[in-house]
Amino acid sequence: MTIHKVTAFITREHPEGRQILLFQHPQAGVQIPAGTVDEGEGWETAVIREATEETGLTQLTIHRYLGKIENELAAGEAILNQDSHIFSQPDASSLPFAPLMSRGMTFEVGEQVGSFHHTIYTEYDQLPNPTQITLHIDGWLPEECLSWRKTRHYVHLHCHEETPDRWTLPGDRNHLFALFWANLQPKPTIVPPQTRWLDDVYELLLV
Image 1 (cartoon, one colour):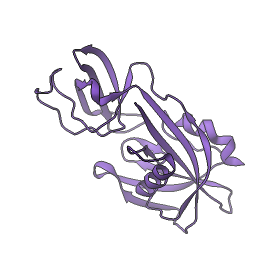
Image 2 (cartoon, one colour):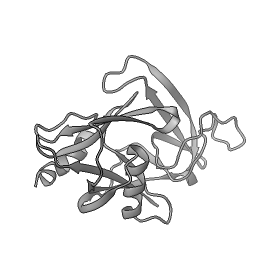
Image 3 (cartoon, helix red, strand yellow):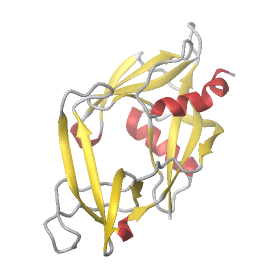
């Protein structure tokens, strides 16, 4: 099973030139709105839904499809194809760790024991320059919950509503996202590995 992702490159025209919408995640750095395509959902619906959820904007339209990454997973990575807990042992009856992991999350995976894969998941206090680990889970995920292909779709959206230059919006896990418009020239700095996303489509966004 391939898990599909979408990245929303939202732009507006401004007296200073074309601008792109970014947000500051309180832990994960400056990012581009993105998310997971739900089961049975097309990328067109998903990119508008995810963009609205992460920005609060309701007047967005798809300008054009910019391409895709056929498989974004690195060696030793897998992606969750359904919500699941990570288990403490390679056994579904073993103690599950909290929190519940969401479909679309990517993990480092290692050896396989029976129908389970050894899994490591780590979160940091901030990126790109972390000072401490805030969550580290070393456990096991069942084979049936994992997929080995992740395709990312790049989509250029236009914003058709007046917005402030900066605003905040509640995000996932009780985080507060700080959204802001950034000039496309010079190219804005965002957190890795999202730098690759912007590099892939940068020249197209300037046209």
